[in-house]
Length: 127
Image (cartoon, rainbow, N blue to C red):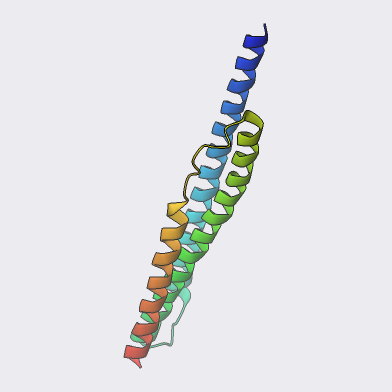
């Protein structure tokens, strides 16, 4: 009886983790696609009286900002998951397990910074 209860508790925790992962995936997709839609709308409406170089630089800077914001959203989500995962590890006794590194948010932020720098260079060259 004890073993069955323990097994059911473990399965419940596993299903809770899967549900949490699915919620995070939905938040990431929602944030990404809303960012793309806002980027497209803003790039269409922006800079009607600007020259091509300034408009291109502004759009590239906006794209870099979008990448950095999406990476920061990933950091926030990973941080929330990391704290709940540490609490689960502490309750289950698996504190020695290696922690997963959040490579995707780090890469997005670095790419966003590179794109911002490219936008600044385009603006300086277009002047």
